[in-house]
Length: 638
Ligand code: ADP
Ligand code: MG
Image (tube, rainbow, N blue to C red; front, side):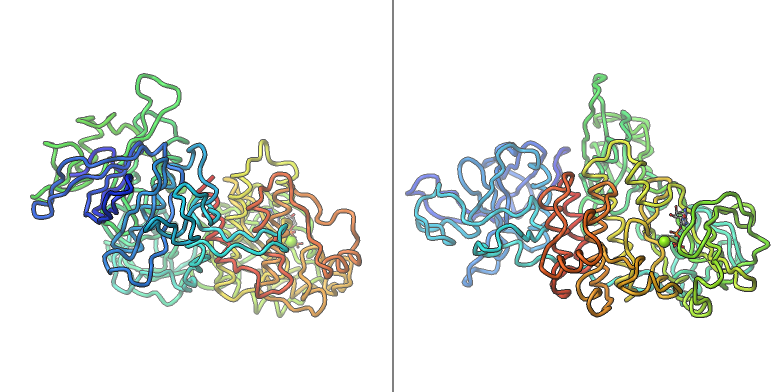
C-alpha cells in the first residue's frame, strides 16, 4: 500500500555508501519512498511484496544535487540506469530498472528540491570507486565536482556566448541526449480510428448543412476521418454529420467526461492550478505518472484558516478485490463513485473534496473554417461592427458571422495583393489548425474588394500589447508568450510551412492572454516593391538572417532567426530591434557577427536561447520543436 504523502515508490538497487573506509561495497534491493520531506528506503520482502524495516533516509532539504551517473562499459544489466542524490554525506547511488523510471525520479526529485539553498554548481558525472572519482581521477571524496550542472533538470543546452575562447567543458551526462527532438506532428490528430467512440469536450452548433451538433460529454462514433480537421460521426440517436476534430477526445479510461479529471498534468502543474484557484478543498484527479495507469487525487487545503494553503497528493489504491480506495474501509468499484463519496466525507483525507478544479479551457477552440466544406463565405452573412486597424492590405474590421460568431475581416485593397494566387493558397491555409495560430475561416472572392475572414482576437496585436497592455510583466508571463509562439511555429514547421514575416506585429493576443501567430505565408502575395525587395523600406530587415538578406533564402531556419528577434521584442516589451541603426548598418553589423544585446528582463538562459536562433549558419540553429522542449523545461523550473 502507498503511504498517503508518497510522491513516488519504487524498488531500486542501492549501492552501499561506504561511510567508513573499511565498509564493503555492496548492492541491495530496497524499497524507496519519496515524499515532499524525505526520501526513505526500506528493507523489502520480495516474496510477500511487503515493506519491512526502515533502513535509512535523506531529508530532501539537505539534497544539493540530483543527476544521472554515467555507467561503465562492464556494468551488469540490472545496474544500467544509475542516478545520484548528493547531500552533505556525499552521493547516494541508486540504480533504476529503466531509463524512463530514472528520468521520472530525477524529475520529481528536482521538483521537490527546486527551492533548496546551496544547490550545487558542479558535480561528478561518474562513480566514486576505489578511493577515486572515476571521472576526474581526483582522490579526495570532497573534491569539487568536475561537471557544471547546466540546468535544474538538464533539458537545456547552454551556449555560453561570452566564453567562446574558453575550451568548452565536456557535455554533462544529461546533455549528451539533449535536446531531444519531438516526433513530427502528424497531420491527422493521432489515436483516432474508424468506428472509435469519442466524447465531446465542447458544445458545437452546426455551422454548415452537413455538420452534426455536439453536446458536451456525450459519446459519438467516428465514421470517416479523411479530413484531419473534420470527422464524420454518428450520435447516439443515429444522426450523422461532420464535427470539428479538435472538439472531441478519445474515451480511454472513462474519466475524460469528468471535469475533475485533468489529463496530461504533472504534480507541479496540479499544485499551480490548485494554488491559483486558492479554494479550501479544491481538488483534481490526475495520472500518477506518465505511463503508470494509476491516478492521484490532489487536494488544496487552508487548514485552520491559514492564508497560504498547501497541497496534498493521495494515490488512488486498488485492493485485492480490484476496488478503489483512498482511505481504508471505504472501497468503491469505480473512481467516480470514490470521488463522490469523498466529496461528502473527508474520511482520512485532509479535507473533503469540496470544489472541482479543472484545467479545461472554458472557451471552445476555433474550428478550421465555419463548418465543414467550402472556404467561400457569403458576405451577406457578415456584419461589420468596428474598425480594428489598418495593414499592408488595407482596413481590418471586427464583425459577426451569422450574427453570432466573432470574426476579423481583412478588406483587401485593390492592387495590394495577387489575389488569384492567394485564393488558391487559402485552401491550404484553411487546413492549418492549431491553438497558437490565428485561424483562417474563409474568403469572400465573388466581389471586390475580396475579404479574408479569420478568427478574432480581443486583445489585438502583440506589439501594442507588449508596449502598453501589460500591468506587471513577470519572467513567467514573457516566457509563456514565447512558448505559445514556439508551439504555433512548431506546427507550421512540421507542416513544412514557412512564415516569412514572423514578428511581434504579426502575432495577436486573445482574451485569455494566449498568443497566436498570424499572416503566415501571406507576404508572398503582397504587391509592393518596398515590402518585397530586401532593399525596400518595408522589408523586415531587422527580423532577417544573413542568408535572407544576401540570397533571399527563406526556410524554417530563417523563421527561427525571426523568432529570436521576436523573443527579444517580448523581453524588451516591444522595443524596436537595433533601434539606432538603419537597414544598411544592420546588414553590415549582422554579417560581422554582431547581435542584439541581452534585454534586462531576460536571464542568461533566456538570452542564450535567443542567441542560438542567431547562429550565422542556418543549420546550427535549433528547430521549433527543440525550442518548444527547451522553453517548457525552463518554465517547468521557474
Ligand atoms: P496586414 O496583415 O494587412 O498588414 P494586420 O494583420 O497587421 O494587417 O492588421 C492590422 C491591425 O488590425 C493589427 O495591428 C491588429 O491590431 C488588427 N487585427 C488584425 N487582425 C486581427 C484579428 N484577427 N483580431 C483582432 N485584431 C486584428
Ligand atoms: Mg500583419
